Image (cartoon, rainbow, N blue to C red; front, side, top):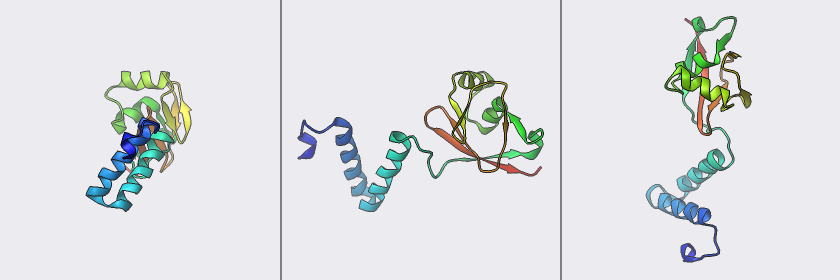
Length: 130
């Protein structure tokens, strides 16, 4: 069988195995869709289509801006302000594809903007009226 072939890359073997197991339980179409979704997020680094939505109160904004650390803590993306500051210093936070690298940075909040924290944690911001 293909899984016994030593010329195939081990990552491709895992993908084939995962797809075939998913197809057994959920059907061929859903297995292919899951594989494509996984590849777009983890291999290609794209934002997932179904990411969590975080509501930010308009009252938390000052002239349409919010402190990056406050945003990460309010969104539940980090466990503490120190963790948020560390991630910002490391350049591990992006807003709509643009790196935010200063812990004192104010971010202009736009309804529907996408925030990426680390390699794989995404969320979408929605501004709600107070």
